[in-house]
Length: 456
Image 1: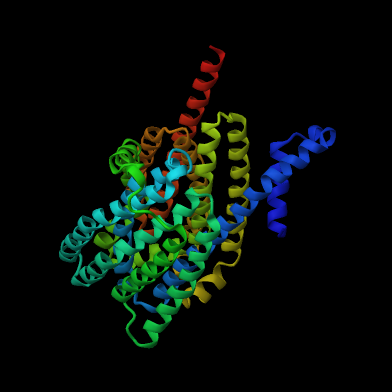
Image 2: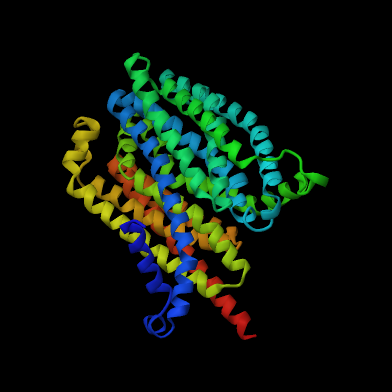
């Protein structure tokens, strides 16, 4: 076991078992130790998967920001932000409900369940691609003709990029993140190599960048599906398409509304800044956010494992175990965010020179501090959001996102209008804090209601 795993395990046991009980009940301690070791391994694979997948996207974005002119990278960032809007709707209707129902209700029929989800994915990607084509012409007219070509290439690549999202996270629903890590490794090998090859052939552009992402996503997805072995029609149609669609709609209708609100506070600036100050500022905003992406995606990856764990604990009525799990993950995420912030600030000069050849160095002051605070806000919303979803209260997640979007409208957009890139980053941090505050209120409300019911 690695040092990091041993350290995480030590913290976990200190939270889960009082010190006196450890000394007085060694047998119980050893049993608990054996029970937690598999979860430490699964968490390590989840972290590895997100590290590899985040590393591939991080390196690709760094290379694009380094080698493309700022305006072209800004066009890429604008198109990718719109893709994320499509992605959050896809996540709300497919992935997020799968993380709740996959390890519980459909655990025994998961191959058939996954086959239904894959069929739904391809059925909905046709209108999704059509929307991207429409966005290409609309935004090309609003900004410049340089914007429409990346959107047209994204319309081809997006279905395969989202397919990889769905397939990778299916392994988390099965609590098998090791397979997802293998896929992340393959993607890590392909994507940076593709970017390098395109530059060597003098073909690198936002268009070829998106096509490379789509081609790599398709290849990795096909390999992972060989391990999942989905079944396209189960015996006696169990589960049925209508039953799965009903479950996902009942859960996802709140998650879908939440998805649009979750996209708004961090991505609306990619739409507004090009209209106010040009595509180059959108490229600068994306270049700064790139610096926080490794830790942000690591938090998201561990949260994918956290949600099914909390869902099972809630189904089993293990409220105390849920509390211990939440406290442990809070400590782990905040420790990692603090270490990353220190490295980012302490090495800021070398980072801008190494990654961007000195580009965007004018933002290495207080805007970089705002970037360093993003992981703390992400940790708060990811953990508390997972808790509310496990409690099957996506409506509370929705209303929390309403609070974050209100903070963006009242504070974030005015700050971006006045301060540009730095104001957009500060506005995003304020939206994280507002969303997290509402989530904490709703979690405490659920806990108070549960105690009241128990007393009755």
